[in-house]
Image (cartoon, rainbow, N blue to C red; front, side, top):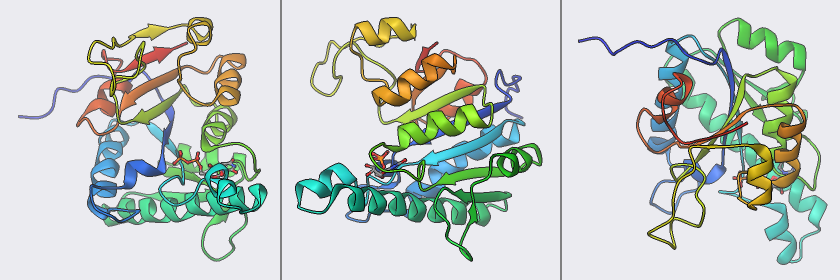
Length: 241
Ligand code: UDP
C-alpha cells in the first residue's frame, strides 16, 4: 500500500545537523551506514517536493573552542573546524549520489576542484532546480559555530524554517538524559525560550532567527520518519516561533 501522502507545510527548509550525527557507535568519525540512514530520511522529504538545504557541523572531528584548550590558536582551530564540516559534507554528498539524488556542495571557503564556492543566487537556483544543497565550511568566519551558518543560510535562501536535528525529541525543560521527569515543549515563543534559558541553539544564531522571524523546529533525526512528519506539519519535536 502506498504511504499516506500529506502535503508538506514547508516548501523550502534548512536542515542543521551536528557532525556527531554522522558517528555510529563505533570509533569512526563518519559511519557510512549512519550517513546513509540520515540521507534516506532527507530523501523521503525531497520526494514530497520539499527543497532541502543542509548545514552540517564538524564536531565529530574538530571544534575550535576545544582545540584552543589543547593549545592550538583559536582562529586556526576554527579554520580546522570549518574544514571538518567540509569533509562531512563530502561524505553526505557521496551518500546522496549513491542514491542518485541531485546534490551540490557549496562551500564558504574556496576549495576549487573539490566543491563550488557559496553563492546565494546559485544556491537558490540549485534548490529551485530540484537539487539538495549542502552548505559547507560554516559561515567561513571564525568564532561562531555552524548554528550561525544554519540561521544565516536559512535566511539567505528564504527557507520557511530551520530544522535543527538533534538526538533527543526536542526542547525539554531540563536535560532528559539526566532527568527522567523532563518534559518536552511542543511550542515556544522566542521570548519564552530566552527567558527560560532553554538551549535551542547558539545564542547568536537563535537571536538572528528571532530577528528575522525564522521558525525553528528541533526534532530527533535518529527517529525514523520524524523529519517527514515535521515537514508535513505533524506533531513532532518542538516549534519555536
Ligand atoms: N566553525 C567556525 N565558523 C563557522 C562554523 C564553524 O569557526 O561559521 C568552526 C568552529 O570551531 C566549530 C567547528 O567549526 O566549533 C565545528 O562546527 P560546530 O561546532 O558547529 O559542529 P557541530 O557541533 O555542529 O558538529
